[in-house]
Amino acid sequence: MFLLHIHSCFLPCTNVLTLFGLGVMSLLRPLLLDAVPTIQQTAALALGRLANYNDDLAEAVVKGDILPQLVYSLAEQNRFYKKAAAFVLRAVAKHSPELAQAVVDCGALDALVISLEEFDPGVKEAAAWAISYIARHNAQLSQAVVDAGVVPLLVLCIQEPEIALKRVAASALSDIAKHSPELAQTVVDTGAIAHLAQMILNPDAKLKRQVFSALSQIAKHSVDVAEMVVEAEIFPAALVCLKDPDEYVRKNVTTLIREITKHTPELSQIIVNVGGVAAVIDYLGDSKGNVRLPGIMMLGYVATHSENLAMAVIVSKGVPQLAICLEEEQEDHIKAATAWAFGQIGRHTPEHAKAVAVANVFPKLLNLYLDTESSEDLQVKAKKALKSILQKCTYLPALEPLLYEAPSNILKHVICQFSKVLPHDSKARRLFVTSGGLKKVQEIKAEPGSAIQEYINAINNCYPEEIKTLKTKGH
Image (cartoon, rainbow, N blue to C red; front, side):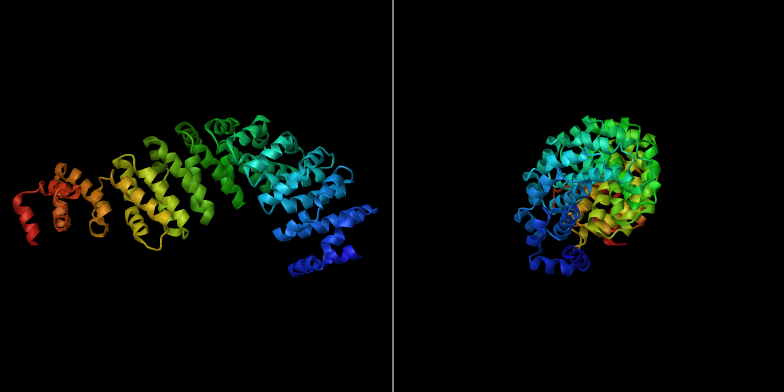
C-alpha cells in the first residue's frame, strides 16, 4: 500500500518534492532488498521517477548509496527488475556529467553490458537508453562506454526486429560518435554505417530521426568517414526524406548533408550530382525557424569550395530562397548563417556577385550590419559578407544606392568598384551622371592620399572637365 500511495503521488510535480522532504528515499532503499520481487521492482521504479525529476533528487539517490545495490541486483534479478534498475541509472545519469560519472564509478557499465546481452528486448532497450544518457555528456564518459565493450552490442541491437530497441541503440551510437573523430571511428569500425544505412527509408519516423542523427554525427568528423557514409549508397534515397512529414527527420537529413558537403569539393559535387542542392533549397521553402539552419549552412559550404559549386547553388535558385530566409527569420543566429552563406556564394566572380546583388540583398546586409539591435556575430558576418561580395560586384545599379547609405568602411569598396567599371563603360558613365551618382561621389570628403580619394580621382578622370565642373557646381 505504501508503494501504491507513492506512485499515485507522482502525478502532481509538487508532490515529488513533498515525498522527498518526508524522507521517502530512506524508506525506499530497504525495499530494493525485499523478498517479494514486485516490491523490489516498484521501489526501483519509484526511485527512478524521483531521480528523473531534477538533479537534486538524482544526487540524493547517489548520496543515499542506492546505486551499488541496483548495479548488484542487475545481474541477479528478473527482467522486470532489470528494466526498473536501468531506468534509475538513466534517470540519474541524464542530469550532468558529474552524476553520469557517479553511475560509471559504481560499476554500472559492466552490468549494463550484461543487460545488452539479455534475450529480452525490453531489458536491452532499457540498458541502451542508460548507456546513451551516460555517453552524451562528454568524450571521457563516451570513452568509458566504449571501453566497456558496448559498441558491438549496440550494433547488434540495431539489427533486432523491435523498432523501439533499434531507435534507442541508434541514439546511443549517435551519442558516442559525436564527441571526437576517434570515437566516431570506433563506431565505424564495428560496421555500424552499413546497418544504419539500411534503415533510412524505414516507415518509423522516430527511428529515421535517430538513424540520420547517428550518420551525421559520424560524418562530421573527417573526410574519410564522410566518404564512408556516402559510399553506403544512402543517396539519392535519403533525399526522399527531405519531404518526410516529420520535421525532425527532415532536419536531421539536412544536417547529414551539411556535414558531408563541408569537407571537400568532391563530396559537395556528389551531393550536387544527385540533386541534393535543389532538394535542400525546396526544403528551405517548406520550413521555418531553426530547422532551416542546417540547410542554409549546407548551401554556404557547397558554395565555399569553388566557382562551379557556387554557381550550382545560383542555378538552383538558391539566392532568392536565402533572401526569403533573411527576410522572414527573426533569430539573429539564423540571419548570421544566411549572411555568411551569401558571402560564400557572391565572393567568387562578378557573375556570382551579380546573382546576389539582383536579389536586393545589399540593403538587407547593410541594415543588419548597422542595426544596433543585431548581435555582434550577426554584425560581423553581415559586414564580412557585404565586403567580400562588393569586391567582386560590377553590377552598378545595385551599388549606387549604397553611395547614399553606406558608412565609410563599406563606401570605399563601393567607390572602388565604380572606379574599376566606369573607365571602360561609356553607357555606365552617362547613367552615373544623370542619376546623380557622380555628384554624390564628388561630395564625399576623403583624406588626401587615402585609398578612397584615389578611387574618387579615378572616377573623376573618366569625365571631361566641363562635366566635372557642372556637377561640382550642382547644375
